[in-house]
Image 1 (spheres, rainbow, N blue to C red):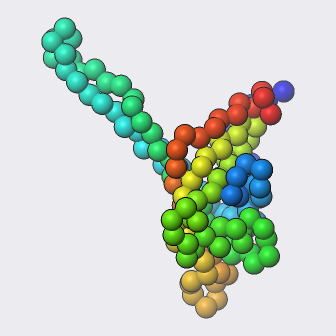
Image 2: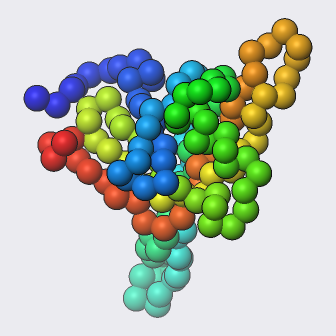
Length: 144
């Protein structure tokens, strides 16, 4: 049976890798946010007497994740390893597993923004964005 009701954010899980077959969890991540950018075309046809019509024509998604750098964790090392790469070497896949079991599998470009910089008394951070690169795959919870 699918999960229902409210839930704590930690029940969302993220996996990273070069492809769907090589996904690993990322240790010590603390915060995430999701930005969905929508492309909407507008027009005002004569037959609608000045009223605007709209159609969603495109989307992109950016998942921003931050936490602690954990050297030796496969997922954490994978993301940190993208920090100084360019071109298709910075590409990969991120999977967002929702609490109810839905899986959002997105080809992406990894943009690592911090791999350890901070105050001397802080634990080294790992911060990155996974920016969509093409159409994601959405696997409903009932299929999982």
